[in-house]
Amino acid sequence: MGRYTKDHLTKIIDEKIPNVTPAQRQEIFDKFDKYSNLGKPDLLKLLGPDKAARFENTIKTVTDPAFGGRGFVSKGTIEFIKSLGTVAKEVTPDNSDSSDDSGDS
Image 1 (cartoon, rainbow, N blue to C red):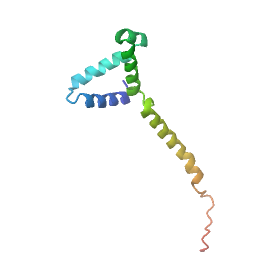
Image 2 (cartoon, rainbow, N blue to C red; image 1 turned 135 degrees about the horizontal axis):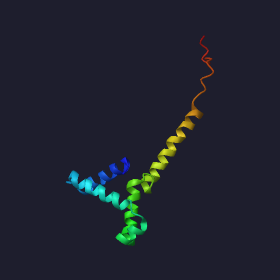
Image 3 (tube, rainbow, N blue to C red; image 1 turned 90 degrees about the horizontal axis):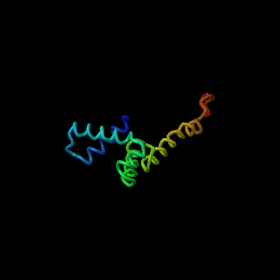
Image 4 (cartoon, one colour; image 1 turned 180 degrees about the vertical axis):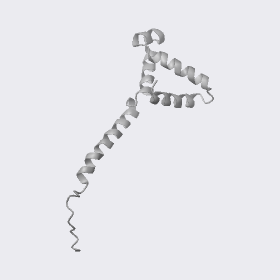
């Protein structure tokens, strides 16, 4: 389980189960890993179509920062930040001309 996934899952567990013990949290992590590593056919057999679809959506939400509404905002923010470098080059005056136009000599 990646750091992002573990951090996000920890936050969700703490919100939903306020008095969770470290042992209970680890049990949830272990089950999450077990189920998230199953293929779709196995999930369908184990959970049925509706629960499998919900679980798959949960897995994507927890593990993929680019999924869903949060992902849309994240992608937009990343693209905005990437574009700042180009914008900065366009609006920064060229410092190669060291002449002073103020008229003071």
